[in-house]
Image 1 (spheres, rainbow over the protein chains, first blue to last red):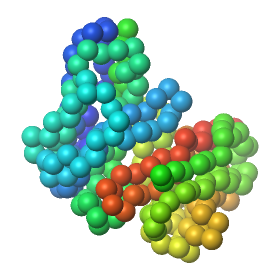
Image 2: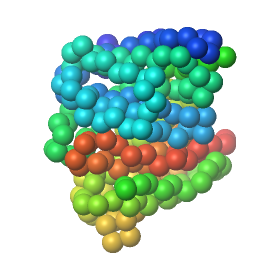
Image 3: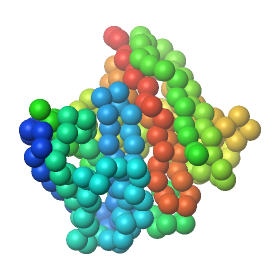
Image 4: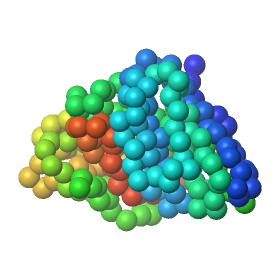
Length: 116
Length: 112
């Protein structure tokens, strides 16, 4: 009964392709996030959704498009993949709502994307 | 903007040594503070947290105290084990949008 599950775990693809990463949480949390971890382990937030509504959209190329069909799912679609997109992408969820302060996140196990 | 700074790694210790990983932050308002741990090939797990000044978070022998006067949240453990080898992340919680801002991570390697 994985709390936050991401698929696939590994993704190897060629430059220029389009790919999607899926994320699902069964914790009943209101808010979901996508983070990118680079080769030096640095973590940076990309997007956040609260009850299917986009609330955080950091400076991310518009080739990246999140989609939240319901509050338990947050998918990430990437168009025209580039070498620099190679990283580990983490999905996370938390019970908080905007303005209520930050709670601890529950993270998925990550998707290692390699663009060749 | 808000930020978190951690001591540089990697940190290499012998088993049963004392561990300190320094973390300082810059923030407006009164953020919540967190330590996360990432074992090789895995996602991040919440290790401990503190939500206000002078709170002490603790878990699995690790502890950290929220020090508002020094804007610090240093992680300590009295006696590390080989199984503690991992990357440790300090983070602060934005009280508006709810996002977590992470430090750069500190890799810990414990040798038998």
